[in-house]
Length: 109
Image (cartoon, rainbow, N blue to C red; front, side):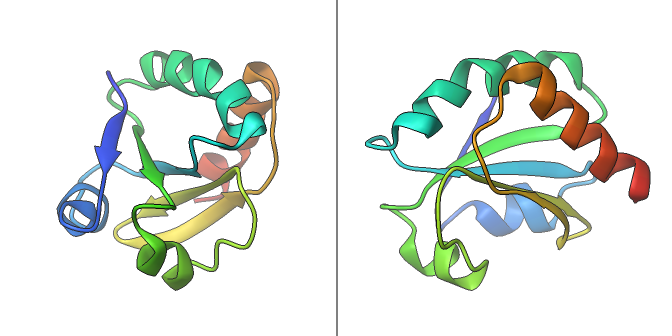
């Protein structure tokens, strides 16, 4: 599964109306920790195929959405289920640690 590029126009359809839980990476191209996490995030999208949808949103291009979800620093990943936030990961993590945190969020919900 690939990572879906989100924007103001498709966020509702891709996240709020998704049948699968969705993890959204709120990022910016200038953010070094965001860029360091990119490969691991994309790799994990393959491992969760059919269980969790992976998406990313550039906060510079969607400031209203970033504000709506209280994004104060990046990288910030939010897991959504049925349009509601069920968990947040608010730091850079290497792939294995990121997987562990995602699993914790999914197990609780």
